[in-house]
Length: 340
Image 1 (cartoon, one colour):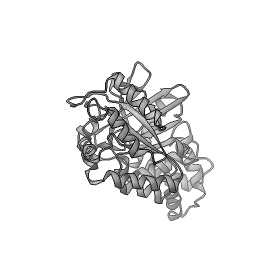
Image 2: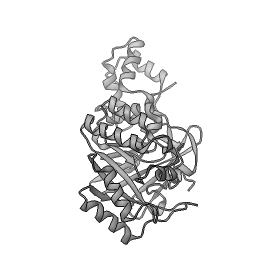
Image 3: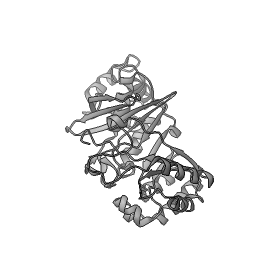
């Protein structure tokens, strides 16, 4: 059987035509699955009987993930541990902040890029997540919390642009007005800076925000922290990001993890300003969250504040991302499929 959650709207229309039905039935079928109270169980009485039977014969409507465990932080953050059909583990996080509810999504089980400050990188790479697995994270989390999220961020386990085709299809489902109907501007894609993937986003005119993990102003030192970036030169990346902002007319979000005595001096701040000041951007400073045998320490609060003030005085739009869910290992860099 075909997993229904794998299909984009256009693919469903194509299936209907190949089966001898009208493509216009896709609207009803799509809404029944994604917007009814019980996915796959909604009223199909407006469809032809023959089509109803064919749908039941052809599609598996069940979620591609099963909820294995849910942990709740003191700050209200919830971490979801899911099991896949091949018994692998992956995590997603629900982050409530006032009127803003964010789901942090995973795109791979593990990660191939081995960033030294990240628990996911330390666990190695298992495989890419399927389209339906990525979408199931959203439907299962929203079903549990009984409310619709306002924002989605592909900042969980894995590198989204390493799984570009599945990311593109899941993004299509998540943002389709008859699907889960998230505005594209509220679905953020995070990357270590994979040039091919960013170029595809430019070519395909993506309107979703792009967040780039920077973490150091020096290309060689950055590659020591993030071995996967060795093949993607920092100068080349910055040049591509300039083209991104010009072509799509939107800023880049830079992510910068403050590590004690590694990248948090005022000299580092000055060099960072010089690197990014010519690119329309916003800078998110992130506290390091220790895990396992990680060989780093978070910056002292006074040093972190001095770094922040320097960036702010230089005229760069900057915020400190507030840590959420650290007590349940749900904060940035701590997801490891329940193994951290």
